[in-house]
Image 1 (tube, rainbow, N blue to C red):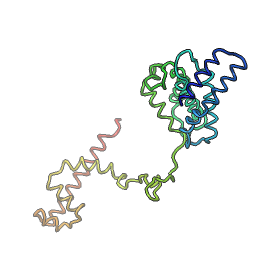
Image 2: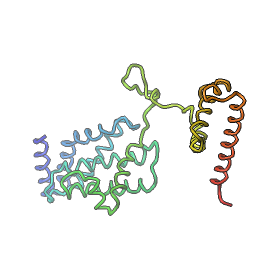
Image 3: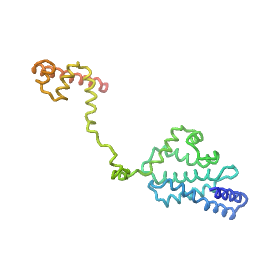
Amino acid sequence: MEDRREATARLFDLVRQTDGDDRVRHEDEIIRLNMVVARDCARRYRGRGIAADDLEQVAYLGLVKAVRGFDPDRGFDFLSFAVPTVRGELRRHFRDLGWALRPPRSIQELQTRMLAAEGDLAQQLGRSPRPSDFARHLDVDLEHVLDALGASGCFAPASLDVPTGEGDSVLADRLGGLDPAFDTAEARVTLAAVMRGLTPRERRILELRFFGGRTQAEIGADIGVTQMQVSRLLNRILARMRDKMMADTASSGPAA
C-alpha cells in the first residue's frame, strides 16, 4: 500500500512538471496503478441489482475523474480524494439506473448535490466527508442529509426466497400474517369504555355468560339469584350498553 502511495505521489509530481502527451502518459500510469482501489470500491456495491462488470467500469470512470481533478498542491493524499470520488460515481450510476423504489424528488436532488460536493469536500478535509460536513457545506438540515444517505438502500429489494441460515427457512417465513383479532379491534376498544361504566356484579354476569359459557341457572347460583332474575339482569345490562355505545358513536361523529 505504501509503495503505491509513494509511486502515485511521485507520478503526480511528474504530472505537475509536464504537459501534452507526457502529462497524459503519467496520468494513465496513475490510473493503472490505482485500479485496484476502484475495484475495491465497486465490490462494496455488488449484489444490488447491477452487474459486477458494469460496476467496475463505473468505478474506473470515477478513478479517471479523480486523477483529472486531483490537486496535489493542497497537500492531501490522493486516496482521500479518489475513494469518495469513485464512490460518488457509483452512487450516481445507481441513482440513474438502479432504483427499485424511488425516494422523493427532494431526496434525489439532495443526493445529486452531495455527489457533486463530495470530491471537493474530501480534498478540503483530507478525509471522507461526514454527514455533518455535508450539512454545513450545503446549508441543509443534518436530518435531510441522513435521509439522503439512507435512501441508498432503495436499489434492489431482497428476495423473499433468500435463505435465513436457519435450516430450510427463507425470508418469507419470517413475515407476519393477518392478525385474526384485527377486525374486532375497534369493537373491543368501544366495549372497554362501556364496560368501565358497569358495576363489579354486572361485569361478573357478563364474564360468566359470554366468556365462561355458563347457563343462566349456573350464573344465578354463582351470584345468588334466580334464573329469571339473571335473564332480566342480562337484558337490562345489554340494553344499557347498547344505548351507551350508540350515544358515544353519535357524539364522536362529524359535526354538522
